[in-house]
Length: 130
Image (cartoon, rainbow, N blue to C red; front, top):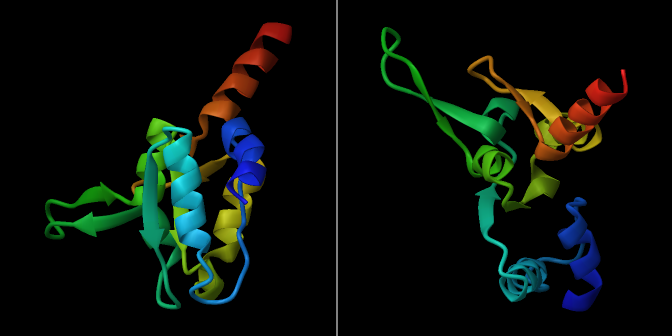
């Protein structure tokens, strides 16, 4: 139920919804986020999605390369909720997502280190104590 998702979403915990195809998982999450007035980024992945594509895609020529942030990276930068749809099919990205969820940081394809807001807070707290 949407009410059971609220504490985890509000606290910033990851939420994994498991169920058969077309069982309403996506709708449930989007309705809950809407009720909480939380913006949601949606990233649809499939079996061909690479770890780099989770975060950024390269655009431009080899001389003038730039990077376009994915929905997941935009969510990390803005503090929005990100719905990763189809994760059961994207087996090659599971380890990267597990690392991100456990450690709250990831090196983006462009070389930047992305650290979650919660991790920044933890680093600031550690600095004050030391």
